[in-house]
Amino acid sequence: MLVAALYDVHAMPHALEAVLADVERESVDAIVFGGDVFMGPLPAETFALVRSLDAHFVRGNCDREPDEWTLSQLQPDAVEWGRSWPATVELDGVLYCHATPQSDMPILTAASPQERFDEALQGVDARLVVAGHTHMQFRRGRFANAGSVGMPYEGEVAAFWAIVGDDIDFRKTSFDVERAAAVIRTTGWPSAQEFVSENLLSAPSRAETIVHFESLA
Image (cartoon, rainbow, N blue to C red):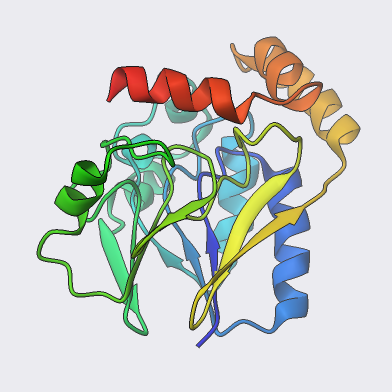
């Protein structure tokens, strides 16, 4: 089966709408949202969009413990819905999780030592584990990161996702960045100006982000 793996949307409906248009053209069999769906500039709009979809959802750390802005923008039933998502979903021999099968917090990047991947895959029989959390696409053996739809650290402003079948096919979708930036500036989100400047008008460096994440691991 073909599965669209959409991770780390971070309340960016403009990016998600563009990705979903691409997904529709691919005639996939299933959609998996891999966590951290609502924390970001437009939680309510993102909730309305994903709630209408026939999809599987994996709980991320930001769904488990939303910040104050997210809580202020969503109805309690939406918050509880995100908290109720399972930590993992398995489809066609592929295990979907947020960070690792054991936890939604560990840091794995393309530069992580092999021991951390071995620990993440210990006791896991799936032919492939698909995760997100660090917002960068990569593949290491049986472990792959699908990238981030709404807050990628790829050195390019776009939405990053993947199609999983016999293997993983990394995808990238452009969206109306100027429209998204204009809307985000009006939201009242405390991080709006910083996000527009650092994630939409420019793109975080993949190399610098890897160094930062590995310093925290």
